[in-house]
Image 1 (cartoon, rainbow, N blue to C red):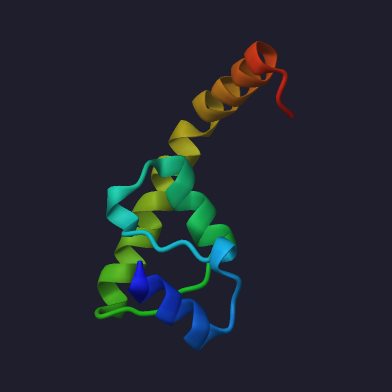
Image 2: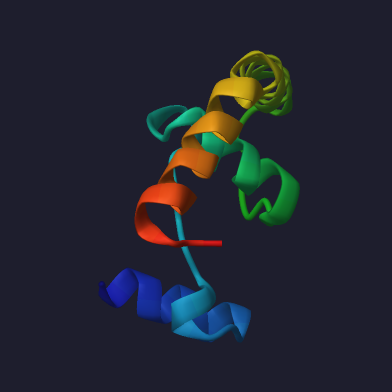
Length: 81
Protein backbone atom coordinates (compact mmCIF):
# COMPACT_ATOMS: atom_id res chain seq x y z
CA UNK A 1 0.00 0.00 0.00
CA UNK A 2 2.92 2.33 0.64
CA UNK A 3 3.99 1.90 -2.99
CA UNK A 4 0.59 3.08 -4.21
CA UNK A 5 0.70 6.08 -1.89
CA UNK A 6 4.16 7.01 -3.19
CA UNK A 7 3.01 6.57 -6.77
CA UNK A 8 -0.09 8.66 -6.18
CA UNK A 9 2.03 11.40 -4.69
CA UNK A 10 4.54 11.29 -7.55
CA UNK A 11 1.78 11.44 -10.16
CA UNK A 12 -0.24 14.02 -8.26
CA UNK A 13 -3.51 12.08 -8.48
CA UNK A 14 -6.20 11.23 -5.94
CA UNK A 15 -5.56 7.81 -4.38
CA UNK A 16 -9.15 6.76 -5.10
CA UNK A 17 -8.61 7.37 -8.82
CA UNK A 18 -5.43 5.32 -9.04
CA UNK A 19 -5.76 1.66 -9.93
CA UNK A 20 -2.87 -0.55 -10.98
CA UNK A 21 -3.50 -3.74 -12.90
CA UNK A 22 -1.49 -6.36 -14.70
CA UNK A 23 -3.27 -6.39 -18.04
CA UNK A 24 -3.02 -10.11 -18.70
CA UNK A 25 -4.44 -10.92 -15.25
CA UNK A 26 -7.82 -9.14 -15.51
CA UNK A 27 -11.09 -10.08 -17.22
CA UNK A 28 -11.68 -8.89 -20.76
CA UNK A 29 -14.24 -6.24 -19.83
CA UNK A 30 -11.86 -4.57 -17.38
CA UNK A 31 -8.88 -4.97 -19.71
CA UNK A 32 -10.76 -3.13 -22.48
CA UNK A 33 -11.79 -0.41 -20.04
CA UNK A 34 -8.14 0.03 -19.09
CA UNK A 35 -7.17 0.36 -22.76
CA UNK A 36 -9.89 2.86 -23.54
CA UNK A 37 -9.78 4.97 -20.37
CA UNK A 38 -6.48 4.25 -18.65
CA UNK A 39 -3.05 5.75 -18.88
CA UNK A 40 0.06 3.70 -19.59
CA UNK A 41 2.69 4.31 -16.93
CA UNK A 42 5.37 1.84 -17.96
CA UNK A 43 6.18 -0.68 -20.64
CA UNK A 44 9.18 -2.90 -20.93
CA UNK A 45 8.52 -4.13 -24.45
CA UNK A 46 6.48 -2.05 -26.92
CA UNK A 47 5.94 -4.99 -29.29
CA UNK A 48 4.63 -7.17 -26.47
CA UNK A 49 2.32 -4.37 -25.30
CA UNK A 50 1.03 -3.87 -28.83
CA UNK A 51 0.35 -7.59 -29.26
CA UNK A 52 -1.47 -7.66 -25.91
CA UNK A 53 -3.61 -4.67 -26.88
CA UNK A 54 -4.58 -6.25 -30.21
CA UNK A 55 -5.46 -9.49 -28.41
CA UNK A 56 -7.60 -7.64 -25.86
CA UNK A 57 -9.46 -5.69 -28.56
CA UNK A 58 -10.18 -8.86 -30.57
CA UNK A 59 -11.39 -10.73 -27.48
CA UNK A 60 -13.53 -7.77 -26.41
CA UNK A 61 -15.20 -7.53 -29.82
CA UNK A 62 -16.01 -11.26 -29.63
CA UNK A 63 -17.32 -11.00 -26.07
CA UNK A 64 -19.16 -7.67 -26.36
CA UNK A 65 -22.64 -9.10 -27.10
CA UNK A 66 -22.44 -11.38 -24.05
CA UNK A 67 -21.06 -8.59 -21.87
CA UNK A 68 -23.97 -6.36 -22.88
CA UNK A 69 -26.46 -9.11 -22.04
CA UNK A 70 -24.79 -9.57 -18.65
CA UNK A 71 -24.96 -5.85 -17.94
CA UNK A 72 -28.64 -5.68 -18.90
CA UNK A 73 -29.45 -8.67 -16.72
CA UNK A 74 -27.60 -7.18 -13.73
CA UNK A 75 -29.47 -3.92 -14.25
CA UNK A 76 -32.76 -5.82 -14.24
CA UNK A 77 -31.87 -7.86 -11.15
CA UNK A 78 -30.36 -5.09 -9.07
CA UNK A 79 -31.93 -1.95 -10.49
CA UNK A 80 -28.59 -0.62 -11.66
CA UNK A 81 -28.01 1.76 -14.50
